[in-house]
Every structure is written in structure tokens, then in C-alpha cells.
Length: 238
Image (tube, rainbow, N blue to C red):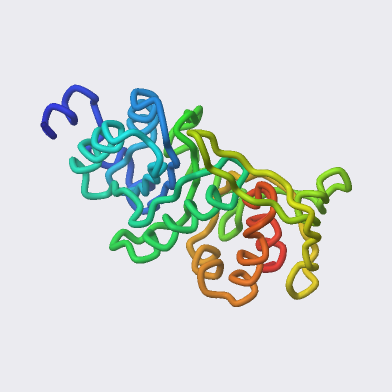
């Protein structure tokens, strides 16, 4: 019952200021467990002018998927990603989940300014207004995806080929004996966080630029590619 969801969970139903109403954020939230925690997170970051793409892990229980769908159905600006991945920790599937949501978000009717990615166990310590003002004051038109040139002790992540394995209810990433080719376009690989705040223009660049696509393909058999992909692309994009 949607009216009960809105009433009992106290979701915000209108922008709390003109500034917020005129600056929409997109969120990508990847989840696979702990429904109650997800609902608390969603309630904390929800604003009617924002848009939310929820990626539910394909291997999540049916009852969990159904419960998430029931919540999502109550909102016009929350949706489940059109393509779902069976996510393996530190595998390419984790990066692909974000890409899937980005592809959906760029076709949204809501004109958002920045996208922020979260997992279901995150929780905000800043308000929506705080986040917007911070973006405007220090990062206007720029991406937040900090990183450094890939350290020596991390080079194994991209120098040898890794594979995702799924069997007997277990999933993991394991190295092979294959040495990887050099990065496309002789790119310098940077290393940073899998979490980011990105402009819509950068997201569109990521989805359309040949170099971005080639780096994505090259990253398919690396370890935890989301920790090098965004930060490397950001350097490429200036």
C-alpha cells in the first residue's frame, strides 16, 4: 500500500528549498541484502526532484527483489535498473552494474546534474542541501573521483587476467596465469575509490567515447576495475 509507505516512512514529498528544487541529483544504489537498511538509506537521501536507480543483485532472493519492487512502485522517480548483474565482489560485474544504471539515467525525463553511487550499507551524514552546496562551492562542473597513479603494490590488479567464478552458492574473483595486454591508447592507469560524484556530461562521455568503451572492455578481466576505471577516465577527460 503506497499511501501507507509514504505516511509511515515519512518520505519528503516536496523540495525543501528553491536551490534544491533547481539542482537535481541522480543516485545509483547497488543492493543485495538488508532491506530495512536500504529503506533507511533511501528515506534519508530521498527528494522528489532527484532520481534513483536501484540495482538489485540478480542472485538476491525472490522475496527481497519483490519487496524492493513494491517500494519502488510507489515513486515515479525511483526505478530498478533495466539490466541486472549477478555481482561478484571485486569483479567486473560490480562496475557493470553502475554502467547499467547510467545507461538508464541518461534517458531519464528528470534533468539531473550529478550522479552519486552508493551501496545499500551506506548512510549520509550530510543533507541534500549540504551536498549540493558543497558541489557548487568546490566542484562545479568537475568530478569527484580522487586517485593517484597506480601504486606498485596494486599493479598486479591490471597486469594479469582475473576471472569471476560462481558455484555452490559462492562467488569470487581469482587470478589466471595470463598476462594482460597494455592498456588501450597507452593510458596511464590511476587508482582510487569505486565511489564518486560525476557530472552528467562525464557520464555521457563514459557511455559514448571510444576510449572509454575500449578501457571498459580492457578492464573486463582486471581485479576490482571500479577502483581504476572512473579515476583513469577522469584524467583522460581533463
